[in-house]
Amino acid sequence: MYNVDESIRAFAESSMAMALAKKWPLYLSTKNTILKKYDGRFKDIFQEVYEANWKQKFEEHSIWYEHRLIDDMVAYAVKSEGGYVWACKNYDGDVQSDLLAQGFGSLGLMTSVLLSSDGKTLESEAAHGTVTRHFRLHQKGQETSTNSIASIFAWTRGLEHRAKLDKNEKLMDFVKKLESSCVNTVETGKMTKDLALLVHGPKVSRDVYLNTEEFIDAVASNLQSQLN
Image (tube, rainbow, N blue to C red):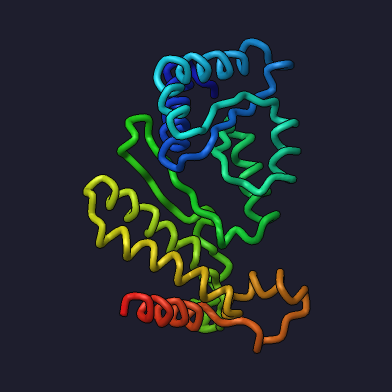
């Protein structure tokens, strides 16, 4: 399995479209010092695409594009506070995305948004997958404490993109309030077990976290207050 120039070029366009949409700088990481030809194509094509189509747009928003070695980029990611787009080759991205999600909180807080090179077509999903273990417990009638934030944000990021395309300010306002409701709910101490473990340590008692339905109800109540 490998990429060709056309797919690398499309990846570069998508990455730069995402960076511009977020108004964040863009970093591409490779190991071109070892994989001189293959990774070198990523480095060269990204630079070509940037110079030809994106450099002026980036500079207008005071953002930039830069290539970095993957080991240097990993070290930077661990010490940074975020606020940038990190373009990775497939395996690197698969590993580092989960590392960042767990290292800075929980997989239940991580969104997965794919933006095509046309800047219009977008796919949004929860990065954690189907949470099969929790579903099997639910099927047996047992209580679960499943973090629904990533699933909620999968919808909000899709709706946010729809709002931008349609210039729908009312929908955009709803999206922002729903995301804010999720954050506010957790910040006031109402959270699912995965987050309670991070706050209180490995031996959490049942009274410090909400089950799946209780957390959704808490977010809904918070949202209703904001909408009113």
